[in-house]
Image 1 (tube, rainbow, N blue to C red):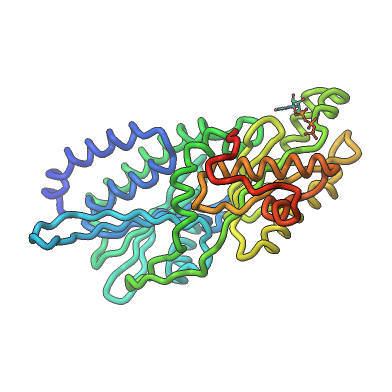
Image 2 (spheres, rainbow, N blue to C red):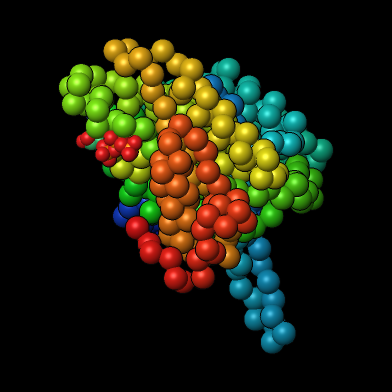
Length: 356
Ligand SMILES: Nc1nc2c(ncn2[C@@H]2O[C@H](COP(=O)(O)OP(=O)(O)OP(=O)(O)O)[C@@H](O)[C@H]2O)c(=O)[nH]1
């Protein structure tokens, strides 16, 4: 984009920035960033990679724009957003490019055949927390560079503000509001086969994962507060949250749902793998030496996150399973489908469950 084009596009950019900061949801904000910058740069595909606390790529959103002509010859722009929660099999070129950006803390370019991949760092709390990536056949001009940096700065500052309202203050985990806000989009993403775009534009389907939702509750937590006071209770809650966070994989989602109750959404190829993940979390808590208390345990109820059901219904099934784990003596993991199979529960008919 030359200077002239830059100036003619400025009003449209400013109006898009205005819309960007009217959004009240971090995921929509991320999508909107891609929608704003793609047309400004004259590219059809843009991506936003998010990193975890170890700077490993954890999540990516791809934005695709294409022109379609219908039978009557009328053309229209079609937009598609794709979110991949579990970044595995990443194209090595993109991995190497983003690693360079991380090491240098500045935008980097990598030639890929006739095109080049261009990546800009995203900052949060002064550290790199992701990358804005796009491909095209020529370098970024100085005007474009200023525009990209400016838009990314507005985005990052506004994202940080929104993120604070979606996080639990004590543990730093996403809160209940964040889970409820993202349920619809999350469910759509769960139902979709996972795929990524290769540098050449080819699409590869990764193995379709299945997802499980768990409700996790600390056992006899009231006693800890009663015996040791709320400050110790808070410290134990924070430690338990950190331990769980580190035991789950970075691509798994963990929310503080209420007082001593957490919700996790994990991907796993089979029921056995899902169970082993939740068992590992239970054992990690049981094995840890917490201050003041001799022993701390958790109970877990989980259920397959079937995208054909309403998220609230899946949550209700996992919650029922949690209460069964409590009833059976606590410090255990119960799966809804198994409880139905073994006759402990009757299957809840679709739409019949009591939602919480
Ligand atoms: N310290 C602290 N306590 C909290 C917080 N949020 C909730 N709680 C306490 O967590 C306790 C939960 O108690 P209950 O729901 O009775 O459950 P429990 O004692 O864990 O027993 P079971 O769940 O049946 O094993 C209550 O005493 C709440 O006051 C918090 O942020 N900090």
